[in-house]
Image (cartoon, rainbow, N blue to C red; front, side, top):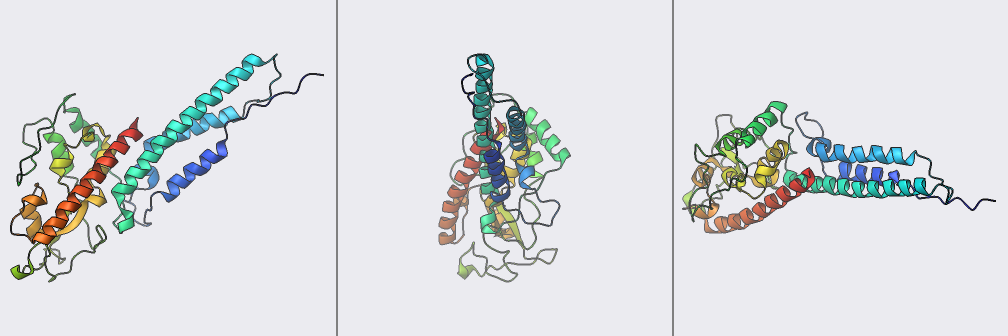
Length: 301
């Protein structure tokens, strides 16, 4: 009577499929309705495709015979074992990439604060960003940060200016009466909190009949483009970083014009308490953006 046939445990596909579903359906909360909104599968399409590719290989592996008579089928047993180990390694790497993307997009979208969902860029938009990125030489180094009170600048004629111009045309999005960072759009006639109450400044009315406020980049675009790793992002990830909901707040047109592309620390004539809170917020958001960039780079590998 031959010895018992050992059974090598196959790569389990159920936990993988279940975890994948949990990541995609629960990690990002996308409001239904608007066609322009990006779904989780849009935001992390590339790492998701890589994960699904591994899943197909797992399915093929699991469909193979996995009963072996030893020692007669030792070579087949060893090959099956080696393939399973390789697939487990690929599965771990793919899940790590997908999770990094989901975590980054969740931070950028800021849905916990009630901000509007991220949007899906058009194909021609991505192509334009790709062409502009190609104009930046390999090994290009950003300039040093500006001095206190000075603006971040991307001068004309520099290698990154074409990319900056392309991004500038794409951000900020046109928001209506939406919540940004947990705060609704300020009402017409309400106090402009960027300035002391004694100034008497209030929120006016714009040409569309809405309150005269703008979605302000807390960390300016001219700084974001110089952040470590930003230029190594793929166009679709660049688009989401510069349009990160976590980096937008409502600001009066007057205060936004005064701030321009400098740190809020360089503004003058504003309310001191507001300015101190804004400096703290700026530092917080800068860290969130850098963390998201780092995670997106990991998801691209």
